[in-house]
Length: 134
Image 1 (cartoon, rainbow, N blue to C red):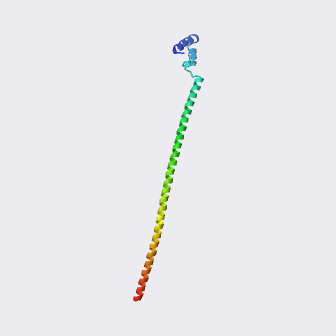
Image 2 (cartoon, rainbow, N blue to C red):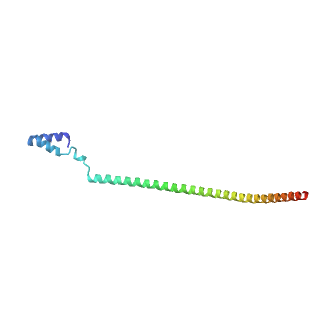
Image 3 (cartoon, helix red, strand yellow):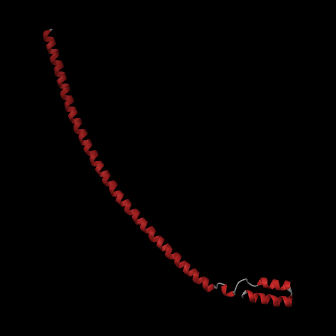
């Protein structure tokens, strides 16, 4: 019902029932046209379309999350291999250093033995000379 029709109806009702009753009856009519109302079918179609959009969006989000999980797993694998390689390299270097330290200990022990023997021999020789002269 357009405004002109509403006005004509209000005038007829006021003439028949009075202003107060006409105003009351006009207030009970919707302020819009019946064609503007949404039907259940329209709501169901729109709701179905919205659900489809949401499902598609969720599926896309799930795909993105799965791709991120795969990327994280790949990065973990790559870095895990790098860490293992570094550990292996450092382990080999440490083993090499330990071997060098062991070799140095052997050399130092030999040199200490030689120096101690030479020192004892020198002291013994000095003592022998001192007792022969004295």
